[in-house]
Length: 175
Image (tube, rainbow, N blue to C red; front, side, top):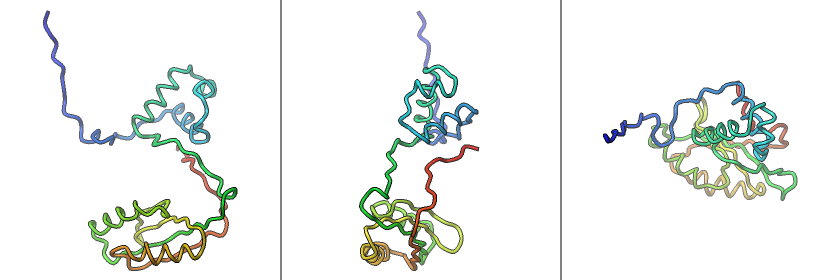
């Protein structure tokens, strides 16, 4: 019996390290992802009933979302009003030097600072926007002067303190 050869193609560069081209989402995908964003603990049977499919195709879609990286992880969203008081601050950071190496160094350094819960590279007046959580104003002073300002290449920090959270959502509208 003749053995068939396995055709091993070199993977497309866009598929290496989990980088896939954007997945085309149909209306069912969008609805299913909306349901999962609102409550990721919903069981497959309930999801299947809601999207009018059987359990297996719903399960396969969810597996595909995970494999393709559309769903990064499942998390618990905490109600900060029911916990010890904390303070949230937005910090606009400007760097002395905007060369790619300096930007990458700052991004790497920020990854290791637990008070920074979000970090965005910006276009415009400031280079980065950080969302920071600390216990109180004294802790923020220690953070901003001792950690953030101590990073190489930081030239300016502008702080904006959150007085009241009006809206916070983790649901990304699928348009």
